[in-house]
Amino acid sequence: MGYVKDRFKEIADIQSQEIKNLIAQHGETKVGDVTLAQVYQGMRGITGLVTETSLLDSNEGIRFRGFSIPELRDRLPKAEGGNEPLPEGLFYLMLTGQVPTQEDVEHISATWARRSHVPNHVFDVIESFPVSSHPMTQFCAAILALQTESKFAKAYEEGISKKQYWDFVYEDSMTLIARLPRIAAYIYRRKYKNGEHIQPDGMLDWSANFAHMLGFNDDGFKELMRLYLTIHADHEGGNVSAHATHLVGSALSDPYLSFTAGMTGLAGPLHGLANQEVIRWIEELQKELGTDRPTKEQIAQYIKDTLAAGKVVPGYGHAVLRKTDPRFTAQMEFAKKHCPDDATVQTVWNVYEVAPAILESTGKIKNPWPNVDAHSGSLLKHYGLVEEDFYTVLFGVSRALGVLASLCWDRALGFPIERPKSITTEWAKQFVAKNEPVA
Ligand SMILES: CC(=O)SCCNC(=O)CCNC(=O)[C@H](O)C(C)(C)COP(=O)(O)OP(=O)(O)OC[C@H]1O[C@@H](n2cnc3c(N)ncnc32)[C@H](O)[C@@H]1OP(=O)(O)O
Ligand SMILES: O=C([O-])CC(=O)C(=O)O
Picture 1: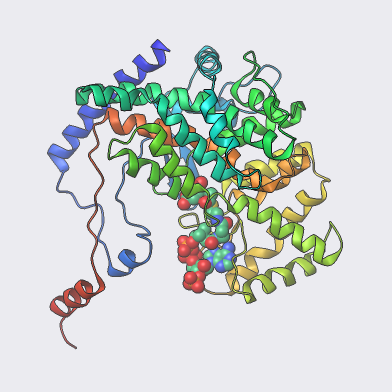
Picture 2: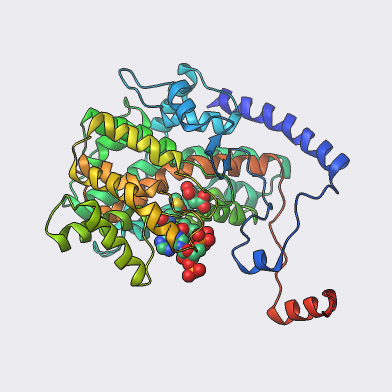
């Protein structure tokens, strides 16, 4: 895996010097003010992190190293005969900031295939769970079990220089990414396919091999996997899974420990688990009305009922985005090409037509538009991956690419332990009393 790693280090060294200069010359420059409301309300809008791999614009959506999703679909290398980008290429782009060649991508595919062997004790840990346990619980436990393989943890214990951290974190990240599809597929086949496991095929690209191990050999599904694993990979640094991985990594917990933290966050229904919730919500709607093609009027009523019951409409809203998520649009385009008549896909599109106006009319939801999770389940279901409890595991396999590329950057740039200041409400009351003039 020499040359990608060497290229990354060269680029990171240049960036590291630039950051040192930036801090030396402009370290006192203010990037924002913090209000008490922000402190209490999820730190929304506070700039407090550096994440090199991607940047989110609230109206335009995500850009990976400056490239939008349509640009990535155009410019990243494809599999032979395929039209969707290979996630290997996105990983290369996030890591180096450079658009990879076909050869770069093949090199990464081959490296991940070579490192994909999962030690038996990880399967034993999965097997120790009741089959009924949620796939995300099994996934998190399996990643933690894999921590026995951490080269970073071992090297740290033996005593390495700070300057070497990035090297071991890089190696652990590559190995972990290589093994995740096998672990995820094992959980899937164990839970839903009577434990009839499928061995990896080292000749396939990362996504196609994952599809193969899950038991889906349709070319359309492989294409969907390439798109899915690309668009879910990263969403700048403040989202729960990226931030948790970065935070835990800042204590020099190794990539396995750090990524487990990210995945336990992704398993929350306001974050990654929302893709499961969307399909459940649609299926309940279809069941309640006794049709798989509810009308827009029926959907509108169902949305109002959901809100009246004090629940969220899954797949809608976002902490940062204020327009339709381009990841939703990319999946919509894929569906228009591959499965425009699918009943669940059409229901997703009908929800998109009626939901924003209803959500907007509440006057409190800041973003009435769909996010990535509003569409993904309907596509998976179309190809026969109907077990919605599993969807967040797919999301997690993809998210590894972004958060682990970022973790390599964190260590290459020598970022310190993260430790913001917290306050008590008593402190806030006294601060306000001292600082605000009495009217
Ligand atoms: C990959 C991802 O993580 S994308 C997000 C996936 N999550 C979902 O789709 C779940 C549904 N959506 C939500 O719960 C929210 O929109 C979130 C969690 C994504 C963002 O939360 P916030 O930034 O706090 O949203 P916002 O500032 O608009 O919230 C204001 C109010 O609107 C509510 N609201 C926001 N979105 C929705 C929604 N889809 N349905 C109903 N109510 C909503 C909030 O719960 C909050 O209500 P409250 O004042 O009674 O507590
Ligand atoms: O950005 C966020 O907060 C949530 C999100 O869409 C993601 O992590 O993909």
